[in-house]
Length: 191
Image 1 (tube, one colour):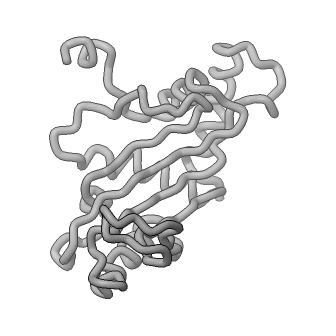
Image 2 (cartoon, rainbow, N blue to C red; image 1 turned 180 degrees about the horizontal axis):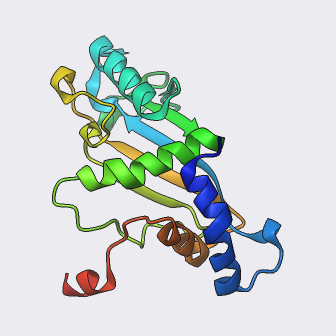
């Protein structure tokens, strides 16, 4: 069965984007390629190793949130100011593609983002110039899959949405049509 958001994209969003940007070829339309979740754990280094409790919890949380096992990233260079040496595990990462990516995006928009405290919308200026969108979340508790009663270590994460055949305007329209909660222009002008 096709994910709900993917079906909405194919049936409604594609037609609106074709009209708005006057693209005649469907293969040239912007397409969500992947979503990358990244959790930095460099602050939890103890000597030469990552604290095992922190490593286990980050691994469990990312696996529950994404539905796949995370990969731990090692530092490429030594940086003395941050007390990091080459080879230390400094981050955990998950890359979502296909139906799992669409299901995660649906849960993110409809369940997780509304649970952010004092939420006033995500910035619509966090595009990188090629149409990719990134934002950060300060705690994993916004995802309903994570039971905060059993959490010993609160961590945030960085979420990046990578697009294909897109630019900033097309990606912004793409996400807005899917219901992504960007800051409204009236609220942005007040701040």
